[in-house]
Length: 280
Image (tube, rainbow, N blue to C red; front, side, top):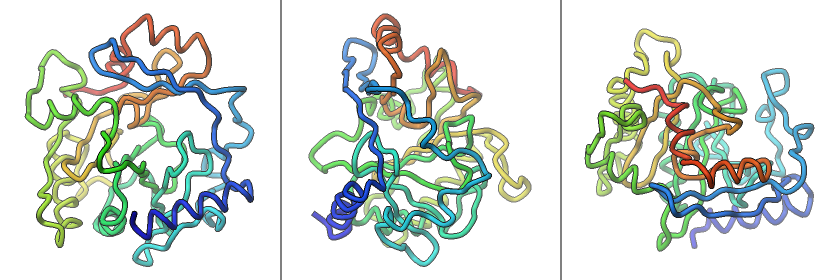
């Protein structure tokens, strides 16, 4: 266990005692008889919308809650706990000064990310705008810890097929996603490599041009493991009452009630994902 992960666990316990984090109470239901497996978390009780700070009027990351702070990274970013986690140990990497969530990621973001990645196993995700599931306008990348021995997320097989470039041209999702594999042996220059791969993905998926566009012209989700980096084009946040961010493509859904659970059991969750992507 790395020192940084130990520090994260310690800060989580402190935040729980001070009630600085407010974990959602959920019950887990697995769906395993569809094209891909899914994990659905159903909220217990009413959603605490009154507790959540939304929009640019109040920025919860400027200043950030010091009770949630884990560590300063490179004097440009701060690693903090998610105040409203579904899963304990959910971390946010925020810029310590204002940077827009819907702007372009840059080398300082990748330098901070790879510094944490060298100490904590798991997978990263990024929602670049409200249409892609972002709830805050201040830049934040998100990390879910995973043990090396365990799988990362339920829907890994879909990304495996994308990594082999087995694109199904009739699939809306396949036409909305592209993935580049990382050089796992090039750890010294991993930040530069990620920045290069990100720019290649931006160009490949026609997200915009950082040289001429102030911000991306298409909303997107980004997912990142130690093996690959992927971008998914988005056209809207929700379908049939389900709000989808990058975790939806990883196979994680949040259900508000029994009606949502029953719909997922009776239908194919792929329909939801098909309806929020923007194929090219």
